[in-house]
Image (cartoon, rainbow, N blue to C red):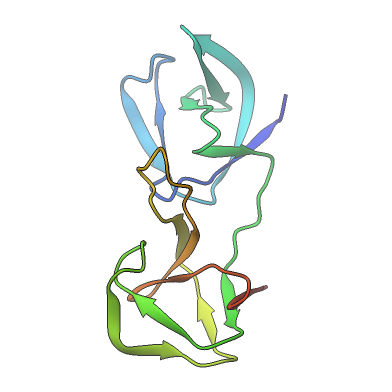
Length: 142
C-alpha cells in the first residue's frame, strides 16, 4: 500500500465523509499530495481513507500513487501557438511563443478528455489558453 497519492485530475478530487462518497466536504486541486491511512471497499470500488478520516476515490485516472512532480515552467523549443480550448481547435489571434520563451504553467489537461475511444494528448494550461505538451516543441524547466 502506498502512503501518499497525488491528484492528477485537472478538476481535482472531492473528499467525502462516507465511503459511498456522500456528504462532500472539500475539493483537492491537481498536484495536491494526500496521505492515505487505509484502503476500503464499497461494493466493487476502492476508496482511500485520508489521515483526517475523509474518503476519496482510488480511480487511477484521477489520482496516482506516490508523489508526482508537477511542472511549473516550460521552455519553448520551436515556435508554438496558444489556443482557446484543450483540443487546440481555436487559435488565439496573434499569440505565438518564440523559441526560448519561458512560460508559467497553471495545470495540465488532456485532449478528448471525455472520449472513451480517443486517447488524449497532453496540453498545458497557461495564461490565456492552452499550448501543446509535445516534447518536440516544449521542454519542462524546474
